[in-house]
Length: 207
Image (cartoon, rainbow, N blue to C red; front, side, top):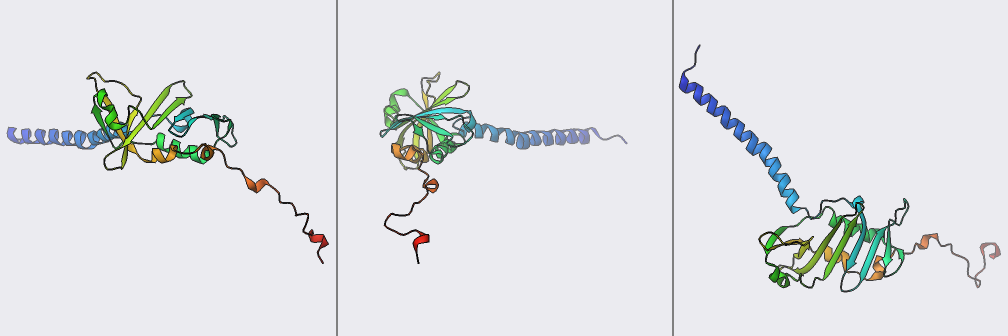
């Protein structure tokens, strides 16, 4: 049985519309979500890619380097002292850097950096990777709601003359603004054996 021409056109239009909906709404949504996630991601490297961190704050100028040993500590303080680093503290910072995301970004002229506290940043983190590449995170003022920090990632001037300013978690401030003593590996007192006091009798001397 031969279908009328108008019916055939309707069927073809329906198939075309169905294909459009599928590719745009299903496959397109997945691709748009991936792009959105990529835009929100601060850095694309992994924790294992990082070889060293140089942290500059108002309190300390600190350099951390991966120890390269299988046993702890995983990180060493190289400057201003040479000591094992507190792995828990370094891991806290790494967990912010690696999966960290920006809430949103602003495109601003370079002469407005001072408004965001980026002309004299409170924190600068220089990241060196094992593949010899490097990245930089600059942290400025809190935003007006005091919920985010203004930040720059690998600062660069765009073709329109502006620069990107991100809003990142205030957890970065908590992770980095520490005294040097907090970056040091804690002393493990569990390995120290207690000895009886000379003034107290040993169990063998008790009656």
